[in-house]
Figure 1 (tube, rainbow, N blue to C red):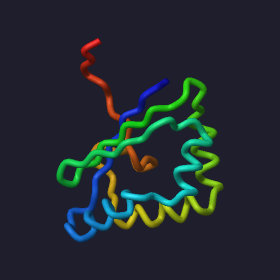
Figure 2: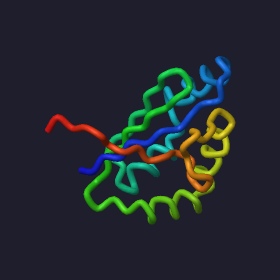
Figure 3: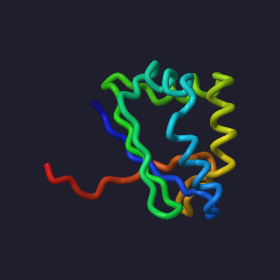
Figure 4: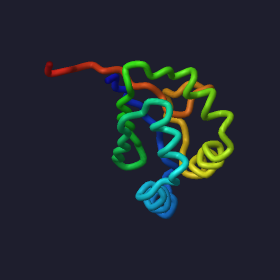
Length: 110
């Protein structure tokens, strides 16, 4: 299993944040099926204020390029992404071509 940790910000609007959290209480079935189909074993999103932190555990053979290409060509995934972008914004450190920015691990107890 591989782990990826990513960050993204929410738009600072309490009503939008509440709606974003509500939508994540039960994501669309096609989205969870898509994630599992491409090797995402577990995904968690944590929030502190407007900062989101995603922990994504993937299968050893997870191919991020294949996952990105499949996501880009899946109409339902794209509908979800457009909907989510209503609530989201890039962090100050995110590249213009990225949405969720990869984080750098600076410590591990192991």
